[in-house]
Length: 624
Image (cartoon, rainbow, N blue to C red):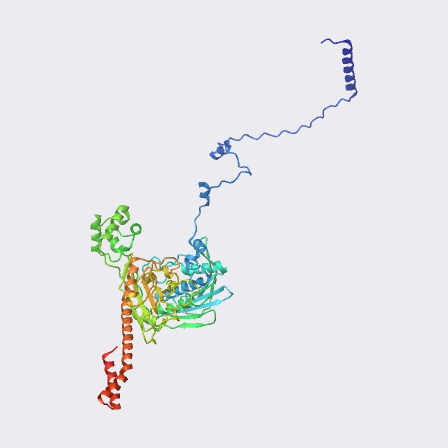
């Protein structure tokens, strides 16, 4: 590129102007910075070795953090499920499943609360040798708010035991002993208090005294469902006019209604099976019913027995061997079981080829299995029946006559039997017809509904036996069930007693019966099972499990009573036929007398005497 003269001058003049402008501007000096005092450097600390968690935290993260737009995973991981696991107490379980204890509706809840309190009162009085006097009071506070108060004259409860008995589930003295008693699990009265707390928020109030010389202690308790522990709200000494006994008051949400499966029905049946008990009942409607004791003799006390070897299972046997203090195997068999003599123990050990002096706690599982199999192969006599106290045939008949005024009442008490090593006794009674009935012909009408006798609805009316029912209706059979003298009012169709009664052929005794149902007749059936351990189907204790041994004994007891009933019905049919024939003959005796008078030319007095003689001959020849 060639620079011309004009371009060079122009560039020089431009540069001259820039220099002139820069000379005119004032020069700026930078401001001096104030010097700060220097701080002393801290001493260097020794570096700590990084932990495993710190190294993991500094490690590069490969997974990206979830953004708000991302969705939560659909399924849980094992770690998430592990965090959700926790233990629950038995009271917390039953608080959510209270229907298992009999508190599934307000009407049944009222009955269950009364039943559990009365059962405990009767057990305590009989164990102490005191004739029971039980007062039951039901007060209506609001439309669905009631207060149940049960007081007895028993031995009372020691002060330190009151909170645990009424405020802790599965606490009692009857679970680990083989002896007949009404209560078994230690769950009833504390569950009633828990239900009252859940529905009304009111604590259970208990007053108890063990001696006239000592004070009466009053407690207000609540149950902590998370820990199954009692919470004492109040503990004080009060003045009480009862010399000894216990009073428990529970406020709960309930509904009172008379009729079948009600509190009134339960107390009436309790008086039947317990003739030595005096019951005083004050109903919410102001009535006061009293069931006086018909006898002053207490039933003989039941004795505690050891388990029978034929009633245990392999796991129970292993646990007993580990906990036993016996030094030898022979001593273990003779001390821990009933009906095992040294001879029987030697026979069992001979089958196992184990030494007599072997320690039970040091044996292996295979050795325990060999002992269990040898026990099953050895013949051992049935356990003692001293631990079971039946009602008795005469007392049962007296109780049945209080229920129905029947023309025939028969009862039987079976010999002791065994199921799973537990002794039990079955008692049965039948009441048929009415005394004022002239003819005892069995009804021939069939029931409209075969399930009418098994109705378990809570509002069903009481079904009392009738002779013929209303026109066009067949009478219904009433089934009354007892277990250790306690009435069973619900779940009738699920009970072994009902299955045995419905499965019996009642037609062989002259009663009409639909298939799979109770007979259709003016009949009342009463069955009582007494045992050291009644196998109830649920914690509410309303039905008995259908073990083959129990079904067999109930069937045999009913058959024995049924034979007497069949003889009575056949005799009634025969008497009715004889009466019918005699009526026909008596109708024609005057005509026969007149004909003989005409033939033999008899006078009127002779004809009358002849007719009288014919009637006497007719009565003598047809006796009934």
